[in-house]
Image (cartoon, rainbow, N blue to C red; front, side, top):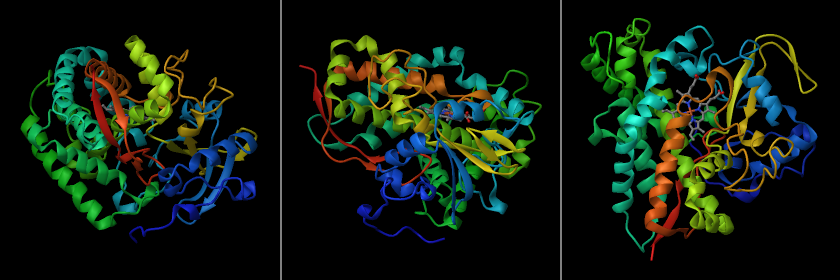
Length: 421
Ligand code: HEM
């Protein structure tokens, strides 16, 4: 695999300068340079269920409207999640089974085993700890000087949270960030910055680490501790998983990426959105009670996972198009969340929007995000504590974004903090 070369973003195609048949929104660089919006706008208007074909990803349908996405996401009989949920196919010798990429019944069994960790009862127990950590992070930030919000706040907070859900050795927590970033740096999502062999080597390092944790935590009996590894290692349905290295690694990657890249980028995306919409920031200053509503709006606005893909298990029809058995179908959540026919003023960031939870960033159906309450809680606590301390988290430079058609991520977001007077 080649490693990406520098290129000039102005060379990226313009969505309106080509015949509609040629429109293909899957290039990771479009997202990095925010050129994807126009592609989806045009597709929603002119060809909402649109066929693309290219060398990297083959033939695939782009589903761009909210209602069509919902129809696919809630019909797992016709639209299968196996064997993978991103647009590109994994290498044959490195396809990682994980429950997000499984259909029932196996999906349901595995999800049920780990779900209690992210359920409201456990979160209520964790809330004081999360708040304490948020306060520590915010109180240690440099005031009045420029720093990267992504690294010091977004990554630090989500990694701490994830370390808690895994009961992962706290001092080693940045390994989780490294493994998460490695898992999502792949040409399967339009990013070819990492050599595939190097990628595999780092992911096996993750597996080795977690095999140690597994063996330390097995044999806890019927009432294991509430962390992901203890739950998997002690349940009759999954206690042999460690013997299938690809499946154990796959599920680890799912839980690590699920808990990391998503919330992290919503934290950064929220700061940017408020800076770009100063009236909304004023509303927030005047009324911090809006925070829970704003959190949903931030998640819709950012849509940190741009897509999920399915494979049709039979011939079917979608939005007037004939989908053939075996076709790839890509649900572009990032587009559905800007669909004006479903969401009023969808292209505006409005923190007191009515029905703010009516978005599709967490998906729908049997795979609907298992961590949605974890994410909302982290964002809510973070903004409550930010508003107690800072009058303005000011973005002072251009954000640098990730090249990916999957993770809508930030690499750098330079900010300066202005404390409350
Ligand atoms: C803003 C934050 C987050 C967003 C936007 C997000 C988004 C998503 C999406 C789009 C899906 C697939 C839904 C579908 O196919 O219908 C998903 C699944 C999942 N997410 Fe999240 N996620 C977030 C945070 C989290 C967190 C914090 C965790 C872990 C604690 C997590 C764990 C998972 C898991 C395990 C699945 C697979 C569920 C299944 O297949 O049944 N997510 N997430």
